[in-house]
Image 1 (cartoon, rainbow, N blue to C red):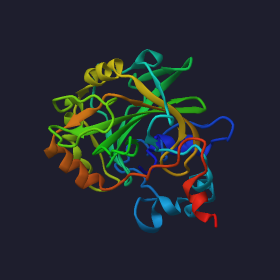
Image 2: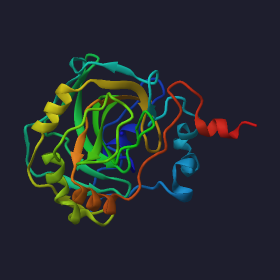
Image 3: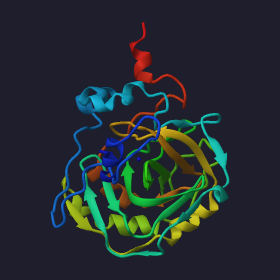
Length: 289
């Protein structure tokens, strides 16, 4: 779904409980044409600005503490539906020219709006708006956290759909607790290329350009994967529900050197796992005597 990546906030701001997300773009208002900085998130992940108190930051964030279909979750049997990759059709451009790469203060985001990415799901076609990153992973694979997670945010009118791809490290000693996750052996060329521009957005609010990069590897990975699917929420304020989540059973890899550089810029930006879909919000449970 970070400080809501820019495209998400505007969508979520106009949300209605029945129909999910209304409006247009990402998580913060998109900067004006020609501006060299982006608006920063008004929430964080540590202390009084963190997830335990997001509902106190604004009345619009009430679902963060009351919603019963919140994200992320622990991906265990019974919390998701495993569907074959043929149930989703993901179309990504083979080659992406340089595009905006932004530090929102809560995440780093690659802007993809208008570049041809699409998702067909449940008879609807969604447009790829952006992808952004969390460290460590927000979803947890049967209790096991991954070093990072990439969220690909798609929109269709009043709806959002997110593909959450786990990112592990090359030659990671971590053994997967779930045999559903399939390991790759080499770093993702797409991620390595995008992150080669990370120094240009070291400061919150900074904007730079990515080099041109290929998405064909990611297309192949998604085409070969099954998906763990459930209906959840934004993982950032206002925690709006009705988001269609799909987590593939294959993951991307990153070199340790690149991971260290990204980690130093992103910091910690992961919401803690929520209760299983349909169950009482953990913060609401904490208030019960």
